[in-house]
Image 1 (cartoon, one colour):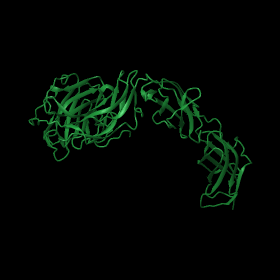
Image 2: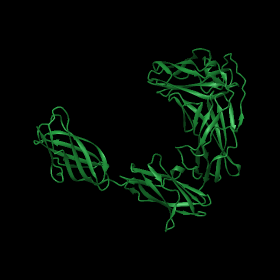
Image 3: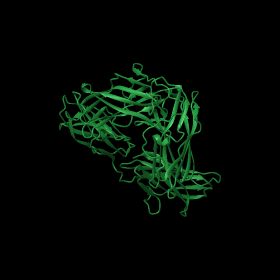
Image 4: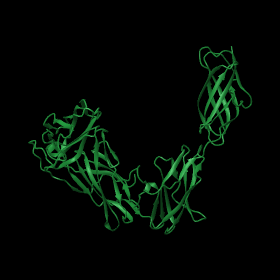
Length: 542
C-alpha cells in the first residue's frame, strides 16, 4: 500500500466533555414531519421490553417491539424502518451512528422476529446496548418510524408523532473519554485509479484513500479528510460509517466495516472542475467516535496526488499493435503507441492501467522514442487470458508535468482492447499407438490400455482426449475421457479403462483429441477420419 503510515502518536486531540442527560424518561421532541396514523397505515404500539438497563459490565440486549396495522385489505406486503439513536447532551441532538432496523411481512432481517399478517403485524428486535457512551447515564431513543405497503400507502413518524410511545431506553454505561486514532493511511489497493493522478476537467475527478479508524470503546462514527494544494487551498470530504442490520456489516465510504472498533474506511475526495493543477496532499484528518469524542490529526502532508487539466502535455493517436495476440501457450506482447506534444525535457514515464481483473501487465514504464516521433511501451497479456482492456494512461514529461487519459480518470474510453487470436484449426493426429498389444482377461478387476497420440495444432494446444473400445462386432466394451498435458506438437497419452472381465478377442480403439479452443478431431469412429497408420487394435487372451 503506497504511503503507508503506522499508528499516529503526534497529533492534536480535542476531547469533547458532555454533561449527562436526565434519566427521568424525558422524550426528545422535534418538529413533526408527518401526522401520525394517517391513511390506512398505523403504528399501534412501540416500546422497549424494559425502561432501564445496565450495560456497564458489557453489552446488554433489550427487545424493541412495535405493531403495524394496515386497514387496506388489498395490501399483500408491508415494510418499513425503525431508527434508533443515542440522545445527545442537548435536547434535540444525537450522537453516534443511526441504527436503521428494516422490517417487513414476510420478514428476514437478522435479529428481528415477526408475526401476524400484512393487516396486523408485530415485530421485536434484539437491540444490543453498547457498554460505552459519553456519560454514565444515556438515553437510546426511537427517532423515526417509516411504514409503507404495496398499495402506495406511506406513514412517516418523527418528533412529536412518537411522544405517545415508550420509545426511550435509559441505560447505565461506561464513559468513553478516549478519542479515535487511525493507522494504515494510504491509497486503496483496489478501486479507483492506481496512479496518484486526477483529471479535473469535464465533470471533475476524485481521489480515494484508505485507513483504519480505531476506537476500542464506543467505536468509530464519522470523520472529515482534508487535502491541501497549491497556494494553501483546501478540499475536504465528510464520511461516516453506516451499519446495515440486514447485511450485518457497515460501510465507511467504499470500505467494508466488520468491527467499528477498527473500521476500514475508504473515503473519496471530490476534485471539482477548476481545481488548481499541481500537488495535493492529505493535510488533516478529523475523526469522531460514537460517544462524540473527536481528534484532529493536523499537518500530515502525506499521500501526494497530482491534479492536472492536461494543459501542458497532450497525447493522442493511441493504438496497440497487434491487438490480437497468440497467447494460447505463452504470455504474448503488444506495443502501445501514442503521439505526445508539449513535453518538457522529453517523455520520462508512461503508466498504463487495465480494467479491473484484466489479466494484462505493463512490461516497463520507460517509453521508447520511435523513428516516426511517437512513443511506445510494451504491454503483455497472460496466457490464461481471453481479453483485456486499457483503462487509463498517464504521460509524464521530464519536468514532472502529467496528462491522463481513459475511463480510469473519468475520460473517454481509449478503445484499446487486446484479444486472443481465434482458434479456427482443429488439432491433427499424425500418428497413434496402443499398448500393450496383448493382455490376459481378468474376471475380477478393470484393465487399462494406454493410448499415445502424436498431435499437431497450429494455434491452440491439445488439452483433452477421449477414447472408445469396440469389439469385433462393433459393441462398446470400454472407454473414457479426461485432460492431458497440453501440447501443440508433442504426443499426448491417455489410459483407457476397460470393462471388468473383458472377453477374449480382438478390440479396436477410436479416439478424439480436443484443443484449448474447444475444437475436436475424431479418428477411428464410423464416418470419422481413419487413424493415421492404420486401425488401433489389441488382443485379450484367455
